[in-house]
Length: 425
Image (cartoon, rainbow, N blue to C red; front, top):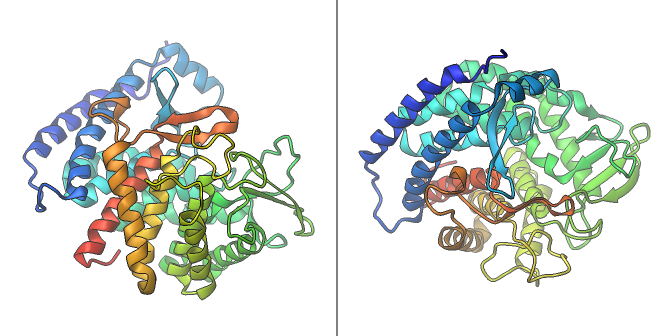
């Protein structure tokens, strides 16, 4: 019999969850009952407690044979939730999946808001399950996986154990940098387009890990690579209206652009909604880390594109692609909205001249998400928000909850709270 390596953890995890639920009942928030941040974190505490129960149950119910089959295929153990299947069953992923760091990140955000040791302990347990990824040079997603988990862990605790893993992760990520192209390679698969060196707009968010590594060590190698990548993307990924291509494929020997595509958007010339959010967030963080004015201008222009688009709904929650042909009968993408809101709150602090406009947009997004897109309590396996779209061209995760939508939702709420309290973030 092949033993399930996670069953031994089950009883301890259940005890922590029970303790967490009991302690949260007694937890007193300082803000009044009408506060949207308080309301959503109260909801998130209950929903994520339920999610942890569902995750534990899903892993415990895995048959020995299915776990053995995964082991035979070289899969690592399932560590984090990602989405739901069309039948409502939970999709769990191994550490190598690009989404594996978001759920630990959510738990760290719960700890940041509540300062509850129970959330801290749960976040730690979910984070260390990803440690092996510090050596995984087969993907550009090191920032998503490691900075959202280990990065928040180190930021909130100062524990050097987290720091050491992060530094190794940064060193692993820069192995994918090609100085001729001036970019970090995103994917190793060629797809039907026979890509040679594909770079996706999503990669902009992985640069945060590299900027952190330079600040932490004083070694400018990391930030120089991040800046070079940002500059190459600035040059080649954007159209004159500041919408973004999803994929730019380069010749790795000459650095020349071979072609421009989409992988998850409607068409190669359309504006994939989450791609616009990745671009906005990415150039916001590049300006924050470098002070280079061209990055702020880029973020401003992307924001203008998003919020002046004729196909943006009144509630500011975009359809999955701004050029999708059946609008308004197209699925929304809540994950694009939450990422956008988080970036906007940061811009409030970075671009004082336009702060009022940014805050109004971000506040409207959070208000509408809270009013119309939250999952009913104790439903949907504990996900917080409904109606995201992962990859509609592949009929994958369409009109489903997504873990990264929830992650950036909590991040945006924390930023709103700090902004209104005058606290740096």
